[in-house]
Image (cartoon, rainbow, N blue to C red):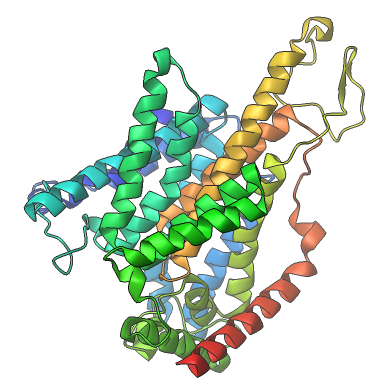
Length: 450
C-alpha cells in the first residue's frame, strides 16, 4: 500500500504525465490508477481509524458540494463534482490512515520536500535559459512555473512555502557525519530561492509568517518582531512584485473587488452558495481567496464545515507541539489516569523493562514534527488567502499528514486530547458566521482604502 501511496504522491507533485511532450503518449490515467491501487490495499487492511473529526467533516462538506449544485438546479453539476472531488476525499482517507507509523510520516515529509526541490531546480533552469526541461517557458517572462496544477507561479510558491518547514526540520536531525544535515539545508535553500523566483507576493508573505512564528517560538515575540521588520525592509528593497503591495495597486484592486463580489454571491445564496466551480459564472475574475471562494460557492453550511475541518488541523498541531505531562505511565505500567493506554503498547509488555528515556525522546520528536506541520499549515493558508485553492489535492494531502501524525503522537502520549466533533457542535456555527462577518468587514475596509 505504501509503495502505491508514494507513487501517487510523485505523480501529484512531479507530474510527468503532464509534460507537453508526454501528454499524448501517456495512454493510461496513471494518477487515478495509483490512487485506486493504494485504496484497494487500504480497504483490505484491518487497521482503520476514523476517530478524527476531519473524516465526517470532509464527507459532510462533500455532500454539501453536491447538494449545492442540485439546490441551484444543475443535477449534472453534482455528477460532475463526484468525479472531481471524490478522488480528493479518497486520497485524504488513504493517506490519513496509511501513514500509521512515524517512519512513513517522515518519508512523506521528505518526499514532499524533495519533489518541491525538483520543481525549484526546474525553475532555476527556466530563469537561466528561459525554458525548463518540461518545455514550459516562464510566466510573464519573469516568473517561474511548472506543469499541471503548478502552472501558476502562485501555486508553485504555495507548494514551496508549505515544504520549507519540512525540509528545515529534516536538516535538524543530523546523521551521516553531518552530510544529511547539509543535504537538507541545501534543499531548504533551494525552496526559499524558489519562492523568490515565483515572485508571488502571497508566498513571500507566507514565508515571512512561517519564519516569524518559528522565531517567536524559539526566541520570543520581541526578537521575532525585530527580525520580521528587517526582513520586510529587505524584501521591499529588492526588485520584485513584493515592493508593489498596495491596496490601490491594480492587481490588488481586482482581488478586493472580486472578494466583494464573492460576498455578494453569498448574500444572494446564503445557505448552499452558487455551487462549486460556479464563481466565474457570476464574476469574470476568480475569488483569489480560498475562504471567500468556499463561502460564495457552498454557502454558510459548506463554509462552516470546511472551516471546522481546517481549524481542527491547526488545533491538533498546536496541541501536539505543546509540552504535555504524561501522567498515565509509571514503573508499574498504565495507572489508568489517562483516557487510554497507547495503542502501540501490547498489554503483555514488561513495564519494568520499558525504556522511558526512549519514550520521552519519541514524544519530544513528535512535538517537533507537530510544530513543523503547524508551520506548513500556516504557510499554506496564508498563501491560499490570496488564491482560490480550497479544493486542491495538496491541501488534503497536507491535512491527511496532520491527522496521521496526531494519531501517532496520541499513541505515545495518551494525555493529548481526543478531538470530537460532538464536543464543539454548538461552537462551529458561531465561528462560521462570525468569521464570515469578519471577512465582510475586512473587505469593506479595504474597499474604502482604495
